[in-house]
Structure formats: C-alpha cells, structure tokens
Image (cartoon, rainbow, N blue to C red; front, side, top):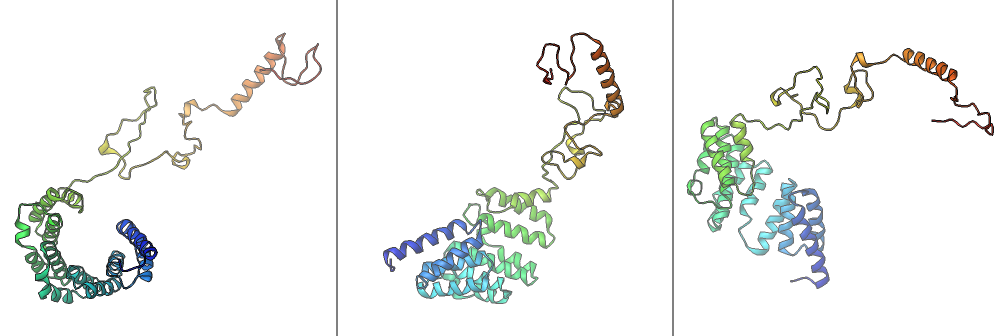
Length: 297
C-alpha cells in the first residue's frame, strides 16, 4: 500500500512467483525475490519474502540479515525460530540455543514455540548431545493426542532423534505415530517406517521369455523375487543381445539359414523358371512387347 500503483503491481507479481517456486525451485524463487528487493527494499513483506527465498536456497547469512530487517520494521517476533535456525545453518548451534532461551520465545504462539523447540533440538544434535535433543522434544505437544499442523513434524523429529540414539523400537513407534498424523505427506515418515520394518519398495519390470503365441522359449518363467536386482525399463538395446543387431528378430540357431543355401535355392528357382513356358524373367521383353524391361511380380 505504500508503493505507487504500477510499482506495487510489479513487486507483487515477483512475490507471487517467489511463493510459487520456493518449494520446487528455490533458486528461481531467490532470483524473483532479488528483483522485488531491488524495487521495494523498504517494504517489510519484501524483506521477509527475500529472507525465506534465501533460507530455502541455504544462503543462511543473507536470510538472517533479511529476517532481522523485517523484524526491525514490524517489531514482530514470529520470525524468531527461523532466525535461530539460520544460526544453525551458519554453524553456530550455541547461538541458536541462546535464542531458544530468550524472552522473545514467550511471545510466540503455540506453533512458534513448537518450531523453536524443533530448532533447539536440532542445535543439540549439531553439538552431539543426542540425549539432550530427545529431552528437548519431550513436551505436552508431543504427548497430545490431538493432531495439529506441527504434530507430524514434531513426532518425526522425536523418532529420528531416538533412532540416532540407537533406540530403534521406540523410534519405530514414533515414526508410526508420525505417519498417522501426516495427512498431507509433509514428512517421509512412511518410508522411514518401512525401512525399519525391512520393507523395500522396488519398481521391477519382469520381461516375458515366451512369445505372444505362448511358445516355449526353453527357459523357466521367473517370479518377481527372481527378477534382476536392477529393474529394466523400456526396450532392450541391440548390444544386450549377443551377436544380434535386430532385437525384434531373435531366433534359435537351428532356425538360421546359411546364405550359401539361399543362393543355391535361388539358382534352382531361376533354372526352373527359365524351363517353364509362359514365364518371363526380369529384364526380358515379350515377343509382342515394346522391348522395354518390365519386371512382373
């Protein structure tokens, strides 16, 4: 609202592109955020968007600077957890822990406090303090049976910390709880749970050794378990079949006809054709013809 109409529209279009690309193409989102920042660096929303685009692109120092600028403009504490996580990204987990204990945390809403707890646990893990990370995540929000937007991520972080500490049975239990609460697939908890259960998902294409008529190819059919460990996709290349260039015409040795035999048969056919009346070979003209060579089929 503080910008002229034409400039405001141009800035807003760039911010829309930041929002569209930030998950799929962080670098693209970052490029659009730089344009918006050049056009309206004194707008808090632009500084915040630029901070998130830099954060998604792992440019943590730049992201922290933008978040600090947005916070100075608005006085809002909502960015406190992500600012602390930028400190982690810059290799300063101790600073992140100091921010987790700052009075500003008490001003955060419930979602912000959970985010701050996740960041603090991550900082503990960065410092090799796995048990402390587990304790940090143990909270009323973790124990609650109600599902909130942060529930899946909190349970996932707790399960991951338990697994890192070697407590596999407990980790499996919490990964399962994370799956139950992860309605929008924001985590890969289901894959982690399957991995702990020894389940391996493999895309396998089993090629049939029999022809379309069901003729016996001389090989026993293979089950999915016996399929190649590296599944094939598409069609066979010519070099995958020994000595055969045309993979659509693979035949047994007994079906291969020697070229000399073919030549002999052609010569016999020519001799027989010449002896039969009413037959004309290619290149010969008829008695009543115009003398042109007109081969017949």
